[in-house]
Length: 258
Image (cartoon, rainbow, N blue to C red; front, side):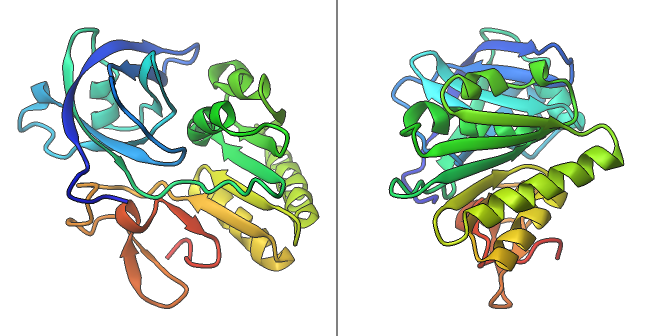
């Protein structure tokens, strides 16, 4: 989680490339000395934005290595469209890593449930963690080649299900429920994806008594808990900032869709 020691740095853009689908962007920044845990995020704001776009944008960290800090994001609004125009050599202000991360249970099976660009933080997790107790079920809309699926599938047992029709979505939910039920009392799930998927994950974790963690994709303005733009409701009835207390939460601790 964030504290007074969380660094804010100007990093150089090493590459900013669209994938085979132009709406998905693979951004790599220079990051000497960076450390990060799977599930944490960063706030990014290019200096050239000026006053046109005041707030930074939050992004899950895809990976941190000697090749740099890697972010995979989808262009969905003005901010991400402007970020997609970054060129090598330009500077961006980055603060992080921020937030709570996924906790792997090395003594039990861990099932990754990823949806769409929610696959991004699991690249680092699959590369760093033991692979014998990790597996992944990936739901996606675009063709598989648009995502870093192969990078993960090369390391851990993985299955992908494309969702183009309502029947596809129903089938994915059926399989997801079966996988979650199979881990009741013996394993846990780690989920990141769109909120409708996370609602389903939480529903079946609670129904079957399976341990689970979900990473919320709430809108964030500051990343430090000050603006209160990313609050979520807890099962205790209060509200907490997902940037500080999350974005990764235990499924038993939060309400979704409130």
